[in-house]
Amino acid sequence: MYIEVSAIIYALLIGGVILFQFALAAGMPWGSMAMGGKFPGKLPPALRIAALFQIVLLAFLAAIVWSKSGLILANWHSFLESGIWFVVIFSMIAAVLNLITRSKWERRIWAPVSLLLLVTSMIVAIG
View 1 (cartoon, rainbow, N blue to C red):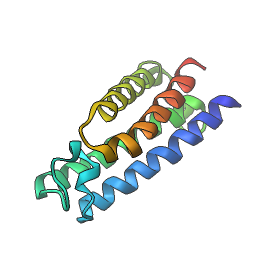
View 2 (view 1 turned 120 degrees about the horizontal axis):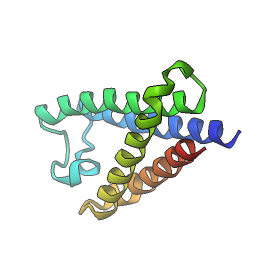
View 3 (view 1 turned 180 degrees about the vertical axis):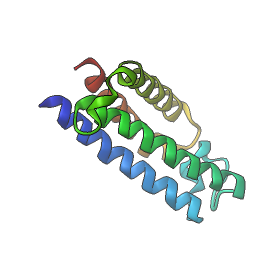
View 4 (view 1 turned 135 degrees about the vertical axis):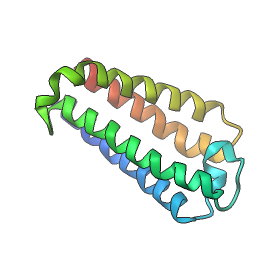
């Protein structure tokens, strides 16, 4: 049961990140909370497009976690054995980057989120 709960927490957190990325892509002036805070205000057009690609990647990561936990697409088993570790490594890199960023908002908001994503993805991977 803890695996399913971890997968649900992961999905809720990643859903928040996806909504944030969508807001950035739509032009919300939250650039100081992304990309190391280099672009306060609206992100430049190229980075707004990059936010859309990140949405797709994040949704794919969530699908891997949910599949590995058995909540959806359980027949992906052979892919999931390695795919879940990709999610863990991705989450680890995101956590480190959010902890060392110059942006205080990324450290305050996204570092804790990234750490929780790392912990929940590891629980699903090990479980």
